[in-house]
Length: 121
Image 1 (cartoon, helix red, strand yellow):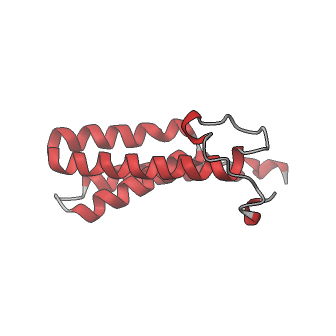
Image 2: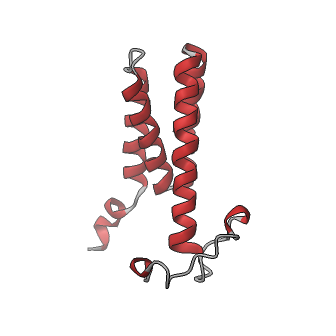
């Protein structure tokens, strides 16, 4: 069982999401849907490990230099998705558990596990 623990890590999933996002941006051919899907894949890669934000940054830089309109679409979608993920992570994991730092702008929400019983551990 312990010889296969390398396959149980989240690194390969993050690499998969990152690579798919980069390939999708490269093959987008000035269409909007692949750009938004690449932003979703970049956020999912970030959700596995935070250092996978590099794929989102490289896609944003490439798109911004290639086509500013698509670059701004990608940046806007990424900012929205990363913000939504931060709010969800704050509400689901950090409140009252001491397992993650509180985000300063979300401390005014006062979300508790009694308000969201599905979030109980």
